[in-house]
Amino acid sequence: MTTFILVAGSFHGGWCWLRTAKLLRDRGHTVFTPSLTGMGERAHLTTSTGIGLQTHVDDVLALVDAEELSEVVLVGHSYAGVVVGSVVDRRPEAFRRVVYLDALVPEDGRSVIDLLGPAGGYFLDRADEDPGVIPLDEESLDRWGLVEPGDRDWVRRQASPQPLATFTDTASMRRPATGAGIPATYVYATIKPRVDLFTEIAARTKADPAWSYVEVEGPHDCMITHPVETAAVLAVL
Image (spheres, rainbow, N blue to C red):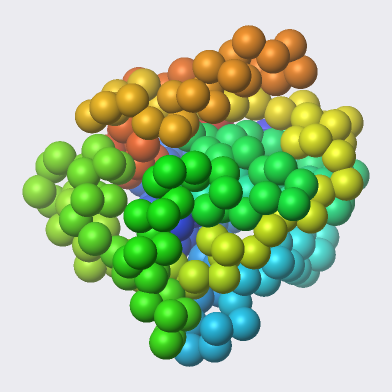
């Protein structure tokens, strides 16, 4: 059986994996769904503007150390692709595979805003610099594919503002995302309201022999809307 660490994307917390994690545990796997500092169940810690990308990298490494984990399949969704890629770059020996679930892929010296390209300006324009956060908006819920009213209301209640520095801090990578000697898999969520940044990343990884590439039938927040399909993909990696 596999040990998974499932890391949530921006505005999300460990709660977003509830349905998918249950299905993986029902298959006998061990699953950790941490909330990163300033997000999800730890959103109250956003009072400090010192929360940045490195804070989230350290959060995941602290979990690995505290639980004395090894041979982990590390999964990062959306923004958390930058987190998990940075974690594996620092501690490759703890992991069996790194999975980017409809996620950004880190590059040395580039921030999430840089990786987002033109979309990055949208988040900066909406940022509230006084508390150091980016607030959630309805447009994001649309992009995540949350069309069922129950799912949308649940995410709206549970989601928290994103610490601004996590989007503006640059990643520090000693090697490319596929260069740590750990197999890297890109999982592309195929149901999209429109072509997005992840479509471009998916095409690039699919064409690169250094990556393995898989698709899941679901929207960006597939772990919420399509947990059966998402768990089935992750369980065979």
